[in-house]
Length: 230
Image 1 (cartoon, rainbow, N blue to C red):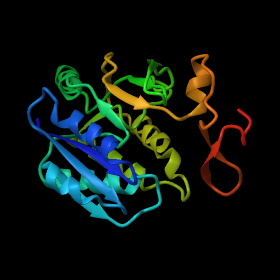
Image 2: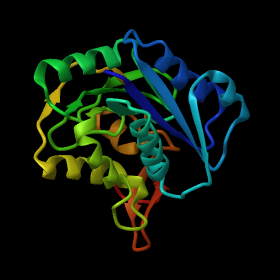
Image 3: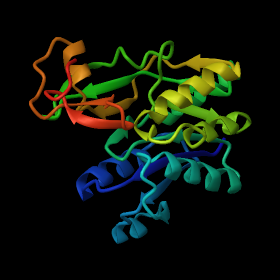
């Protein structure tokens, strides 16, 4: 099974992008290819990394359109399954191996997994309880097989100004489709969180610069948590 890992990137710095890419090329599973899709701010040095580098104009939807373009190119190239990985996230070396194993054993077209949360200071926080594969599953925590690729259109077939919650629309599409879903119990995705909710959820002091996503009447936007009552 050939697996494409799709990363939409925007203005992340070199170290962040390199960490993401290194985690993909360090996978123990053979047959993994990294697709990096520039959302309006292409970095020339990515051309030297040996990944599929797709350059697009900025789409203004928090990476949802670049994700779909990346998946479409991977599908056209004959890949059997896709993962999505945000540019500021990274995966453990056994991530794809584990997810592919669960998919093979269960014969489910969608596999989910937990994620680890990291503090903005770089310290490990906890395993995330929000992305539980029941009420919600984060974009970074899927392996989607070719026969379920049609679900990926949910990232763009959603209301305007909802890019910041595109992951919610994708999860809704997965749930409403009736496809069989299997769950890996290993937290093999790592996520540095700037969301106030995660700090509150784990009983930690909320950093001054932590954010929330809210719709105050003009679409979903990010705000400093002090501007919006939690």
